[in-house]
Length: 453
Image: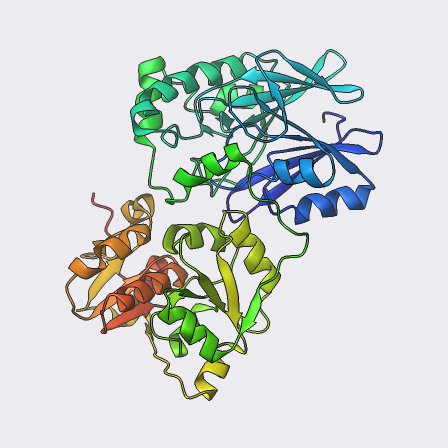
């Protein structure tokens, strides 16, 4: 135990952790917090703390930072890399710079790789090195990807990442490792429940630290990179400029059916956040299914346009505030309203609904199967003969796919329904969704999945 009152604030949907540190004098430090500050305010209020410092390890690609908001609204001192070119008030730090937190100290360590301006923050209690906020450098069992700045810089940043990891690994073994990216993050983190570690544990178990040399490290890191949402390429610049400030209470207008129809005619997009079974039973033609769940923000940013107005369709028991904040934390400030009364009101007004068939795992034989999971999921085991296209690529390829009876599948059905709605938008009509995933198919049929071996 470190003796430091540190509170991890885990965003299960994005796979990230922010941190709040009680400085012991009524003030707090927060690290890598998102624009959705609800958890930060709740943790601080519970302890009677004022957020005095907001540190960002890097220009985040997967969420908008809340540091600018905290600086503007509660007077927090924003700490970030001097090399980041941020255009809002902050304290720019370089390697070795220290900030007195009132007993504790924070030391900046340049650790480029995930981004060119990346800092790790070493927390010191007196001269004791307690823990290090590693952001997107040293992760639990891994290191964050290096291909989000520019394609022509990916390898050079991977080589910088090698040096950064070994710099951090040289810290005393008892130093706690507090990364930002964890399991579920598309910034590259392996699966697993552990979100924090120690330097000693990472030296002993992190396969990237075990790489024979820099070239082997680069080969391993770059070979692990998968796809990522397109909004990752926009948010770094928004974080550099400073995200727009938001009111404390998020909300959007209630639109009747006529107004909704008019907005759609003018180019608005309908995002239906209801559970997949509800969407399947009846939905507005052309609407996009992205069920509200912890990963809602990721798939909203992957599938929905950021440059067109968005109207939400939900069930009354679904939390509108949650929807708006999830959208806001990835820069989707283009939610202009929700359909008042939802699908029931649309139907009551005599407006058209359509359906999507849900099928069981015993109903896919003899039908074209489209598996839209991520590549590592597909490779680990899939229905024999299944066609593989990742969900993020469906919209671009939908018009080229054959118009024939198709069952779309993923791990449980939610992503598959999103793919089916995209196919329907492109004119595909004989599309069904598997209610379940590969394990359900194995259980129902007694057959084995294809792993390519």
